[in-house]
Image (cartoon, rainbow, N blue to C red):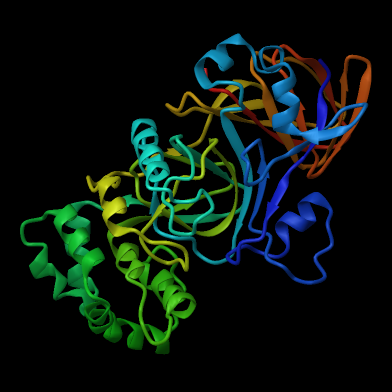
Amino acid sequence: MPVFALKGAIQNYDWGGMEFIPNLIGLSNAEQQPFAELWMGMHPRGMATIFTEEESIALADFIARDAVSILGEKVVAQFGEQLPFLLKILDVKKMLSIQTHPTKAQAVVGFQQENEQGIPLDASYRNFKDDNHKPEMMVALTDFWLLHGFKSVEAITATFEQVEELYPLKQLFEQQDIRHLYQYLMELPQTEVDRILQPLEERLFWGIYNDKSHPDHWAKLAFEDYTQNGHFDRGIFSIYLFNIVHVQPNQGIFQDAGIPHAYLQGVCVELMANSDNVFRGGLTPKHIDVPVLMQHIITTPIVPAILDGTQIAPTEIIYETPAPDFELSRKDFTKGSLHLYRTDSPSIFIVTSGAVKIESEGQFLNGNKGDIFFAAIESEYAIAAAMDSVVFQAMVGK
């Protein structure tokens, strides 16, 4: 089966930037809309379109015609007649919500319960949009900042001692119980949230805080973006409790079920299981369900593990994770080079810089910056680099 051109789906969430994704895929954005995410997969909320010689068709419909031949027997047996991963490009201009994701078992139970309760799938207050888990990883295309997991007990204590306005919280943390502290803060009446955060907002309002490794920088932005009718967002507490992580270009990080996190700023390639299950805890106008969040959050401190990738060939680096649903690789081609491939997994790949030419089954495709392609299992193809180029490829995990 030849390689096919693919068109992704745009998500215009209000936290997105206005330049990177339009420039990547060659679209004008004269209206200055936010282009937050480019989805490349078969999730029903953002279905990709595949282009064959005869037609353009939804990727899910194309795969349904002969799932075993396209995905392979092993993938169909493990994940059903669907692509188990969702590849994205994200441009984070304004910080995203504090969030966690469920395990597969939790998702199956939660999805069934909300179905039995009659909650519509598109209801804004629904927590489980599908019955899948959502492990995810990202690789930075620019300098990228995020919150990832809880800091150590010692680091949280030091934060309360160093940030004068939060010093009263130190008394609540005498037993060094992170879960108790976090649940207390997440369940506080809004009047108490406002009372605690008011002095912090007043100090940050008048100051300049450019150190992105310090929570004051992000808290100032959060006050500016998420204060509503004089009320402060309790997600600001998380900024002081979570690890602030700086991921440099071509580095990545993996986020498994239960790890609280929030993207703060930057552009990245993101790869995840094909799911949209998100439990939010602040810094968002979307639905927040604190009891569900607390049921699915891991409060054990973690040390963020930055992924540099493993070199498996002179031109290819694999970013390994424990997720069976996906695997991500980055291919760096030099101008004039030729590379031969035979896929052992269905895959989607995108040219993030440069330009390549693809030949498969006697057919030729131009791969300019932003072009996306789909290859079925056991596809054979050649990639010739017309200039120095970078290609990110999503596959099923091994």
